[in-house]
Length: 126
Figure 1 (cartoon, rainbow, N blue to C red):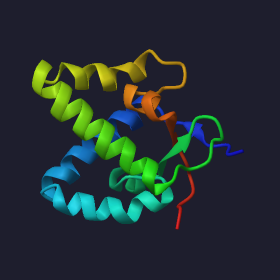
Figure 2: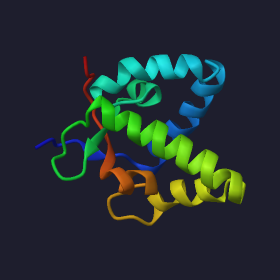
Figure 3: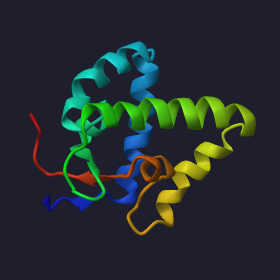
């Protein structure tokens, strides 16, 4: 079992801000290519830069690349941004990310959907 700590709220929102900046700077295509390589360690590009990783809630082990893609592309981007975001004009994103402030495991709603949590890992992965 891993002994990494659940990420602090400021690191969670810093990761979110950095991810948005990276998506904008790389015109989303570059971010997807970068995600292809970082997902193999259970991370997104911003999480890689901040030593944060996505772990399975039950096993505390880094998730597979497939689950990173499912969590970050299918659930966060397509479901919360395009489907719900278009209907509610971003309110769904606020609820999704705001959930981390009231959850015991500091999970956002997209983490609840795929049974993951984000932890800080002081060591570099690969």
